[in-house]
Length: 193
Image (cartoon, rainbow, N blue to C red):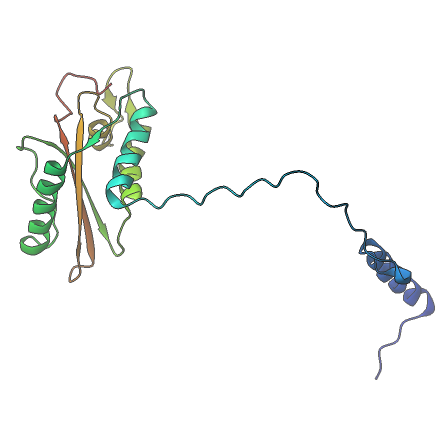
């Protein structure tokens, strides 16, 4: 059985195809419309964004969060990064990637434990910045049943230096990040900024 159209249906289909072809400059041998040559100086394409290394990514993400609340930038400390690296490797090698005990140290510290996939430095910092939603700067408090200490350490105005390290625990399928801050923040009774 063949496919047939009535004369009026065929007219509508042909009219539609002609309209479509005409819009594309193809009817009756018409050449497509060509725009006149561009006589302006071409604008060079912008440079692709620079790929940051982990150090730059940690530092940039921290400093963006700090700038958002009017706090000055941190500087990268190789000493803090080395100490964080030593601790994160110890947690990987001896403690099955569990959180480190950092509350009694000379530094402020933030940690992130992630199961499954590696987490890029910016994503780690963004996770800590999410606590901002629960922080009330007016009365320097955190919403009930929420934590804000990771965020407040990150934006602590008296903190000047940062150093971070990451480790993958293959057997446990876990990724651990530790950042150290000096001087430490989260001083009781003080506002972060």
